[in-house]
Length: 159
Image 1 (tube, rainbow, N blue to C red):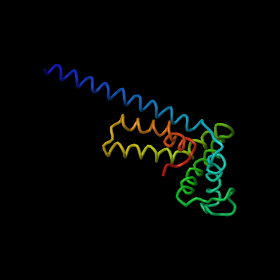
Image 2: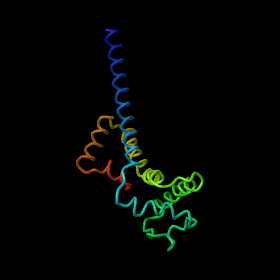
Image 3: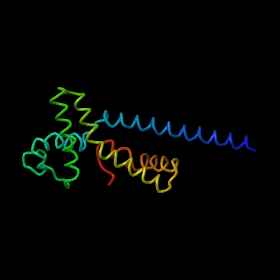
Image 4: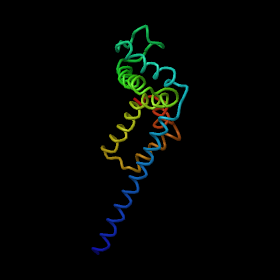
């Protein structure tokens, strides 16, 4: 009886480890996709220009010098401005230009929505949803509504 319980616990630990490896590898692939998948939606037209121009205008997010004009509530443009400060620093100090700089911009301006998505999923997990239920919910959103994957991947928000 004791040996059976020990074997069951070992199998359960192995199963949890396998789930964590799958989630971790999915997270790594998703983060790589965030940086390298580009879209013609908001990221290229609005988020990257805002991120690069807001710090140059001393965080005056509604300045008429910023093109295209900022029409969001102040939180998102301020976060993009902080990201843009880092991007301007990298651009000037390291001389990063061209496609590598674009991929860095592309990924970093998407990080706030990506972090928000993962915070939502962690909140669901802490409130009692099991890992397989969260993966199932996330898969449902991807295949049916494409909310959890495509919106943060292209730079939008779930909130």
